[in-house]
Length: 477
Length: 136
Image (cartoon, rainbow over all chains, first blue to last red; front, side):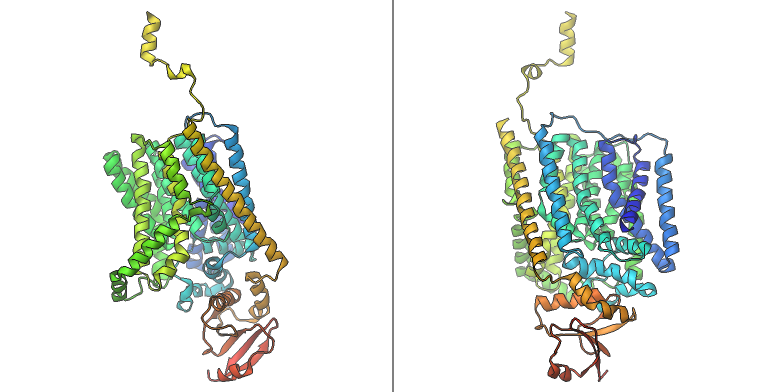
C-alpha cells in the first residue's frame, strides 16, 4: 500500500507538469524529464497538503485522504484535459553517440541501483541523521495522534525540531493512509529522489547539449557512489540536491526557451520545495534569486528580469508561505539563531575557525563522490583536453548556476564559522553532504560549458561544405 | 580527436571503476552484517517493542544505561532508544518519575541504581527495564 500511495503522489506531479508542459503521450525526452521532475513535485505538494491538513483539522485520516484525493483528481484533470500546445523539449543536435556510451550508462545505472538496494537492505531505517531526525519526526507525526505537535518539542532540541517537513511529511502521510508503518515509505521516496537527480541531469543536458554530453554527465553522476549511498541512507541532502538541480536545470531551460515563462514558475516551485526539505534550502532560495538577478542583468536581456521574477515568485510563494506558517506557529527557534549574538561574534572573530573551515572545504573537495581518483583532478584534465565553449545564449544559465552555488557555499562557510561547537568536527561530519547537495548542479554547469567530444574525424565532404549562399550562386552559374 | 577520446574514456573508466569498486565494498559489508550479530535500528526496535506498546503516547521518561558516558556508542544508543519509543519523549537524565533502562546485561549494577534512587517497576525483557525515581 505504501508504494501505491507514493505512486499516486507521483501522479499528482505528472498531472501538474503535463498541464504546464503538454506533449503527446509517448516515450520522449520531454516526457522523461517531466516524469523525473514529477516525482519531487508530487512529493512536495503531497507533504505540504499533509502538513496543512494536520495543522488545520488534526490527524483525521478521512479528511487527509479527501484532501490528497482532491489534489490528485485536480492535477490529473488538468493534465488530461489540457488542450493547448507548449514547448516541446527534444534532444539537442550533436554527433552520433556510439553504442558503448549507452552500454556504459547501462552498467553505471545497474551498479548504482544494486548499490542503493544493498545499502537499503543493510540499513532499512537509514543512517544516523535519517532515523535520529527525519524518520523519528515521521514517527511522532504518525504515532502521536492528537499530540503530533510533540514532534517539535524543545525537549528534543538535539534532533533539530525546527527542520522543515518535506521528508517526514511524505513518510508520515504514507503511513497514515496505509494505517501502518513501513520502512518502504522512506526508502522508496529516497530512491525516487536519488534516481530522479540522475534523470533530471541527463534529460536537461540532453535538451541543452545533446545525447553524448548527457550520457557522459549521467555516467559520472551515477558513478558518484556518495550520491547512491547517502540517498539509500535516507539523508535529506539528496532530496535537497534534487531540488537544487531541478531549479537550476529549469532556469537553464528558461534561457533556452525564453518565451515560455512556465519554466520560471516551476523553478520557483522546486526552489520553494528545496527550502521545505532542509534549512540549507532556504539559503539556496535566497542565493538563486540573487544569482538570477545578477546573471540576467549581466549577460541576459534585462527586459525579461521582471516577468521572470514574477513567475519565479509565483512558483515559490506557496511553499514559502507553508514554511513561514510552520516556522512561526510550530517550530522552536533554530539552534544557530537562538544563540546570543555575542557568541556568534566571538566565533566569527576567531581566525582559527576560518582556517579550520577553509581547510575542510579544500580537503573535502578532493573526496567528492568517493571516486578512486579525486574527481576534481580528473575533471580538470578533462577540461584541459576538451576546453569550454559557452554560447552567448547559455551565459545567463551558466552564470546563474555558478553564482547560486558560490553564494550557497559562501553562506554555508559563514554558518560553519558562526555555528556553536567544534568547527572541525562540524565540517568533517557534514561538509561532504553539503557538497553533495551542489555536486549534480556543478556537473550540469560543467557539461553545459564543455565542448562536445569529437570522437570521429569529420568526413572530408563535411569539412569543405560551402555556405548555402555561395553554393546556390555556384549552382546558378 | 585523440585528445577527446582519451578525455572521455578516462572519465568514463574512472567513473565505472569507482562505482563497481564501491559496490563490492557495499556487498561485502552486507554479507558481514548477515553473518554477524546485527547491531542497529531494527534490533533496537525489537528490544523496545514491548515497552513501546505498553506506554501512553505522551509519556516523558528519563534514561539510564550501563554504557560508558560521553562516547559515540552511548549517544547512538540514547538516540536509538528515543527513536524506538517515539512519540514518548526520552530525556538524558534520571531525574524523571519513570526512567527507561537500556542495559546490556540482565543483572544490572544494583549499587549504581541505588545511588540514583531507582527502583525497578517492570522488566520488559531484552535487558530493557522501567525504573521509578523515588525522589521524583
